[in-house]
Image (cartoon, rainbow, N blue to C red):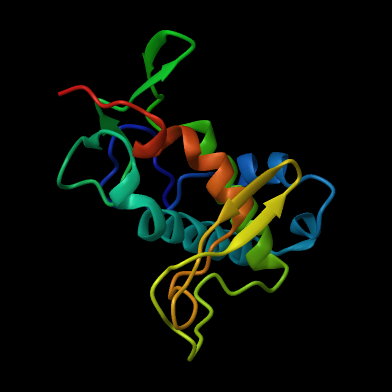
Length: 165
């Protein structure tokens, strides 16, 4: 496993190191998993995040040769009447990768398939005080959604930020 350091590593396949994931997933079944299982889970989680959110990430990739979607140029966030650049690998991305990797260790298939596909019309899901609504016409989306991940990622997605021209 090769971790993205924020420099646009050509062969990076994870946004998070095992040590970072160990820290985030303390007190879960993650601690009992073998190193190879953790690596595979982190690689799959990073891949899922880029497949699911790549078109919605703020900014643009720093290099055509980098293998993951981050780091990015012009990843600008506006909050409380001020703006700032996101770090080269945002904490929201790292937390999401750790969370998804834990789900994988617990047996969740991020790419679970269904015969019941259709276009989005409406659906609602809740995580604590937050909720996400998507409606489907004729079935569910082909891409599995995780409300906690969507809520963690909101700040680094285009719909919640302004990009510099």
